[in-house]
Image 1 (spheres, rainbow, N blue to C red):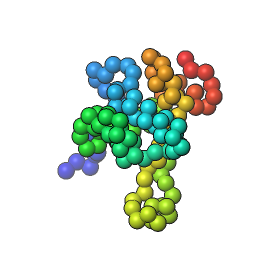
Image 2: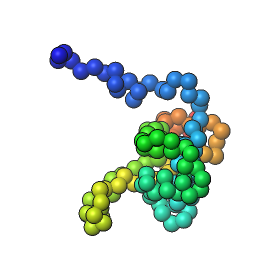
Image 3: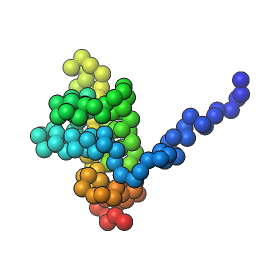
Length: 135
């Protein structure tokens, strides 16, 4: 066994998806729309299961074809700066008798991504969140 660790499994973290066209995937668009709808309905943050339930209720469950599809998309959106997240308070989960939830909210860059045919880069998303202009 080699004492060196292969970086090959981590390559997906830095290499863009091959063959992917610029813009949001349908599931990413649906997640952002769902997050904005939930905020409009009084829930400023949402967790994955809540988003999946809402997507199922609106007939968009066909996008959730395999286990982990939603969470991979949530991770991509966060890495792009279109979502931000935090872990909920462990005491809240303990009182409810369940594991902690990761809570997400749509960022200003995520809102812009929905309204624009051209999705800003991650750097542009960070500029938007800090109040600067995007390029």
